[in-house]
Image: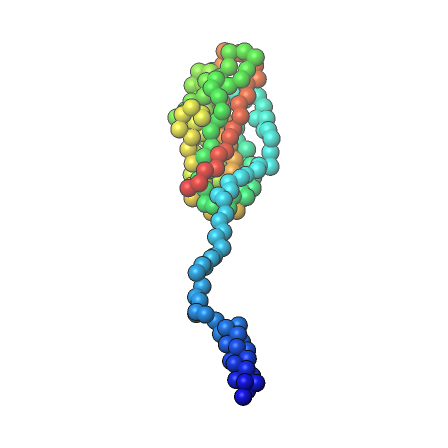
Amino acid sequence: MRNGIRKLLGLWVVVVVLLALLLPASVTAATTSEFTVTATGEYIAQTDNVTSYAFGTGAASSTANTTTSYIGITNTSTVQTDATIAVTTTPWTSGGAGWTHDNTGTAGANTVAMKAQLGPTAWGLGTLVIVETLAGSPNYIYENLPATTNFDFGVSLLYPTSFTDGDENSNTVRTTLAAG
């Protein structure tokens, strides 16, 4: 009889141990959750297809133009931008008296002006943009430019109405893209 009780007690111990191992003590739920976050930086970049243009010698009060598709801008921006145009300095660089740059688009004595126009329309058929100095208020050459959209434009030089000397003058034309 003792052997039977021992067997029964041993069987109960085995059953209790198996139940403890096989049945969870409590039901557990997820205590954490996670997700992935991604973001892309605003990338604004451009290149152009020219590094210089020589208008050459011009008579007083004359106007010289590139074609309206002479300068090509490759826009690799990932966002919509506004493109402005300006010359970087006034007076223009010269070995002589130098020319003042006019921000109203009007030439004068030793004063030059520039205008720009989006291509490919012929000069005067599109909107002429006055090219001011960076110190002025650079004007839009292309406002609300869609991401990765390229464009062409040309520039027009209005020679001074009179010259103090015959030295060569130069300036740098800059287009600038900003998120718009």
